[in-house]
Length: 302
Image (cartoon, rainbow, N blue to C red; front, side, top):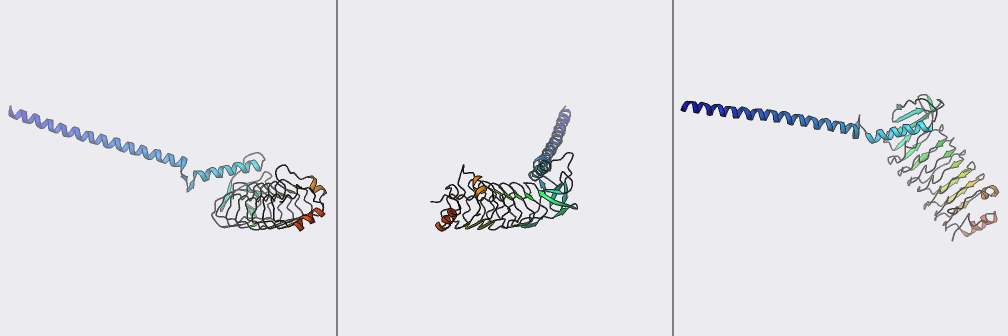
């Protein structure tokens, strides 16, 4: 009887140990499964919010936006094939006789935009290519480009030097907005249009508007505290409100002698062209009035 009891207790002990081992194995399998599930979820999260081939999803989204913009700007129909050459991404334009740069991935301080890609001339670039690039200190644009898009270099606060295309015709709205390091710029002789707020927030010291310019948009050179000299050559026919508003250190001003068409097209609805330019000398104001600039809306200084 005693032997039977001992044998029964031994069997119970063995059964208990085996039961514990089974529970341990099942628990280990469950933990491993949960860990693999967590890893799988993490990888999916990285693909949706993290990186692909060293590029963040934000960068990829920006590139996608750029491509979308380029498709809209080049108009045309059919598919547009995105191509890459070095740090530049580009597409062919609608007429298939030039390329439009859609993104730039480099981090160089000094950038030279090529004049050809894919054996075709570079005829333009979209808004997002250089906007808010704080690394950029100087850039040279090829003569094949005729227009700068709106906000082309907006927020490039370190940009101090730019070589504009010789064939440039138009500078878009806000093209150099808040380029606070930009102290000088040479406008090409064929330039026709300067957009609204194109140079607001820059550090320009002198401005020489070429005779080819016909239109200057509202607030184009708004509140440039660094500006001391402005020369506006003949043929300007439209200067909108507040072009030089609050350029309070401006002391040297030259405007066209002929003003019939020039004066009749001004818009004084918001600010006068040279409002609050307090330092324009009385002698210059007298000279301007003798030239026929009698409308107080043109030069309103205290």
